Image 1 (cartoon, one colour):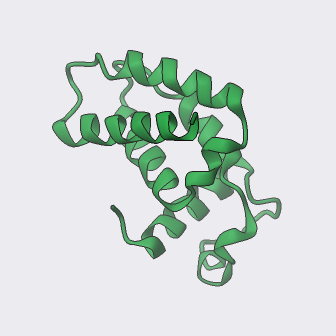
Image 2 (image 1 turned 30 degrees about the vertical axis):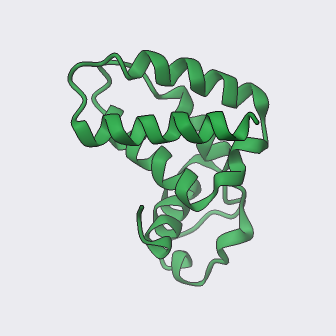
Amino acid sequence: MPHPRAAVTVRCATGGRIGEIPDVQADDSFMVTMRPDSWTGARLFSHLVNRLRPGSDHAELNIHTLWTLLAARPAVLTLDTNVRARAKVKIERTSEDRSLTAQARQQLASVAYAIRLAER
């Protein structure tokens, strides 16, 4: 699992770019002072799920970011059952991509497992 502070940094940087963080940031210095619980990760989760597809040039980056987000914010899986259901379908399709590395496959399997646990 990634280091907790690294997960916060990835989420903050990505979350800021997709509108999860409400204020516009002029630079990345906000990541040092921002409270980790100041945003849910729901928008970022949906954003990443929408980009999961076999053959994508960014598949491995999206998988790793999704995995990191869930490691830091597992509760994001309980916020929207529709996005969670869409994630299951996208993960199944993306896992068939033979060009994925072993690490990406393992991270994708971990995300799928976390989704199964959230459905209990």
